[in-house]
Image (cartoon, rainbow, N blue to C red; front, side):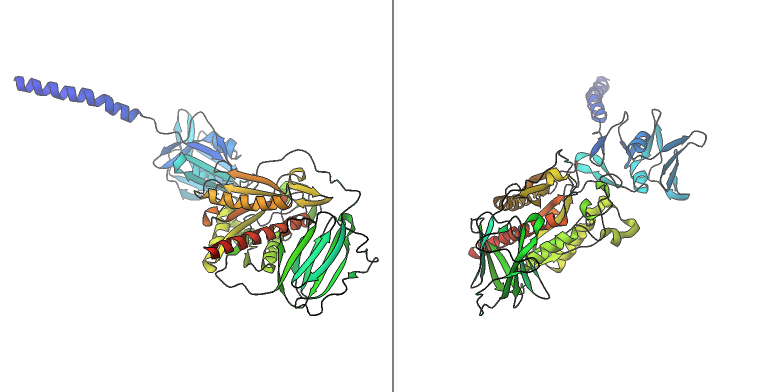
Length: 505
């Protein structure tokens, strides 16, 4: 008998000790689910919860957050959601819903908790054209809605104030143009801000020098005529003739054109003296695979500029299927090719490619496929440059030098990429070299995580990947091209420097 009593006391003691621990374990609250719409957190009195692996949210979040009118039919016990041409009908406790009259199965039907109706967020959101992403590490749901300014590359920065160009009373004067062996030498008595590019059929090298005037040493050609450089070496293998004229009086831009005997590669030589411009000219050679190549692409390919779209005044409508940021990317690729770098350019129009299935919130998903396809076909690609234009106003996106305007650069780094510091170093290298030549031409670097945008921007695909905003919605193609020409030379210099470092090793 004593043994039985002892056994019962032992069991009672074990249960007495174990039960509180079990209660403590079951009472531990699960981490609250957070809900974000386009990076902004949505809150409600009843937080989102998971029922049978389906995230359920209060009906008010659907109506207020997504902007979709919601009505409750008490007699039928149904929720009706309407947005443009889409009508959703969900029955309480019914695993079947209706989308424009067509039945669809639900993983989890709507339910009522403490007088609040909870709806399956993924089902409802995706039927309304909203992208849903579940982020397990932060226990959060992210919704990206197309008809808002969907996070992409545009930083939410709109500084007040406009830049009024300061037109100087006098410009530096052109002093000399010389062709010595394989180098074109141009000198002025002040700073030069050149735009250099090549043209084909016929082959020409063009040097635009804004903010420059003719002086005593080289006189201004008569109106309607061009000056011609005399005493040009006849035996030069690359250049047949050199002409010059004032091409754009409004910006006092002198254009120098070298008529070529054959296609060439050109390279700007850093001299440390901004009044001297040295350009190396070499016979064009096809770049062989294995050399570090660049891919230039555009996640937001239809971004355009208000000054280029007659009749358009709303910055949110500055988009065009024809006159858009891809023209700037094409110029960058052509410049790099002219410098002897293997450059690929993708101008894919994702709106056209995906048609009615296109969603701007998936821009970086589309462009990731573009990048991966190119890298598979061309494994020599090392540099990835995603070119955009910013949404900020002209006051913050324009640099003025001697009365000539340039589109400023703005770099975006995705912090969700575990190797983001490598991309950061690459961006800082470009920025430093750009600012060294044209102080203030970079607005800086904007760091974005999943709370403020995509967070990746395809930068995980290469340690030398950059997302670069070139100017803003109020800049012009001309201003953007001026900056692109400088950017091309910087990228090429980085490529040459990295190649030399590799050879030395």
